[in-house]
Length: 89
Image: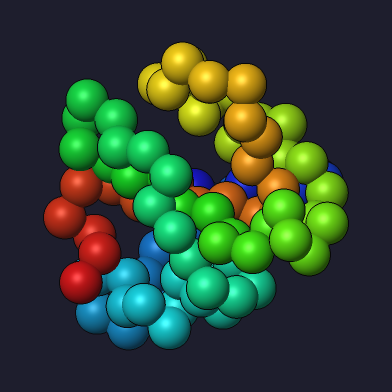
C-alpha cells in the first residue's frame, strides 16, 4: 500500500516482476528510504529517510501504524509504503 502524506492510500504492485526493487521504492517515497518498522505478519513500513530534515508534511496514517507497533512519540513525514513480506528484493 502507498500512503501519501496527504490524500488517500492506494494499492500498489511491483512494476517489474514479483518484488519491489530499491529504485522503485525510492521513486514512490521521493528519496532515500528507511524501514521504520516491521509488523508481526512480516510486512515492512518504509518512509523517506530525510522526511524530517526536508520538513515534509506529517503522514497521519503512517504515523498511526508506526505508533501501533513502536511505543514512541515520533512521526512519519512524507509518503510511506507498506510492503508485504517477501515483496522486497
